Length: 325
Ligand code: SF4
Image (cartoon, rainbow, N blue to C red; front, side, top):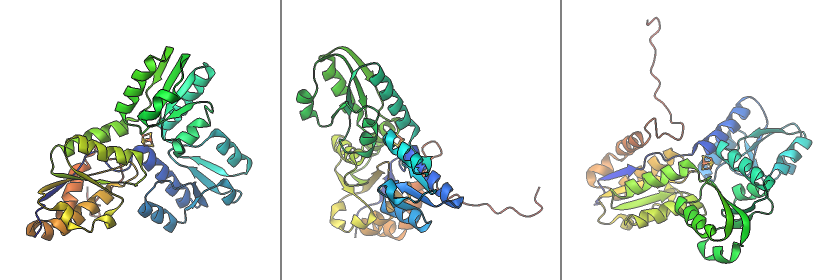
């Protein structure tokens, strides 16, 4: 018999608003009868991509795969400006799903370039958001791991620091502190996304209440890895999985009473419910096992408060009696 009595889902999880908007825009275009493509996977989540495919929305890796006149959705991370120009030239309908926060980052970068700053961009090199940002500031110096900062950051009279949206705030602050000694004038533009900050806080809060954390998200997702790291800093063991399918070993939950679940910005909150249900089925007490579906639905309901809701949830439809006042 298992020992897990309860599973708690961290609040304010599920898609961030940027990802949700991009998905909604793709669905709306398709529903309006447009031949719709997304440039790159709109979200790194197999289930969502499959749903979109079922609606006829195709993922393409390059604009060359999109027929003249079709619609192409730019995903939340944004793209280099020349990609949009090329799409226009090819007669494609560009539906811009770039997150408003990322658009703000791009504008800030343009300003910094115009003002002549040497720009340091904290981000994962090759991440689509960083690739897109470099289109606005090709000479920016991209740095990621702390060990490389010392060698990569020059001494300049006027320097500016800016960040990819999902970088951890502590890292941004540490880099800013280092750069103070490297420049006469240092401009700091804090573009760490508030959704990232809130999610990290709520994950830490949940980690503080439970015996074990399960972090759900892409293996290569930096923001997911950071959540796992934070759980461990909070003193709670954590395992990271991509999807419910990875949960096969009940031994992971041996002697565990309360489990917490959190997820990255590309993980739908409904996936967290499915993970919750699976944990209860796999390692729950007799009672928890029996009520796994009900308990998972309740955990989702508690996490998805209106203020914290970051993904559209199916809402129960209340039948309206005909002729009712
Ligand atoms: S993490 Fe923040 S900036 Fe990035 S897409 Fe989501 S809401 Fe936008």
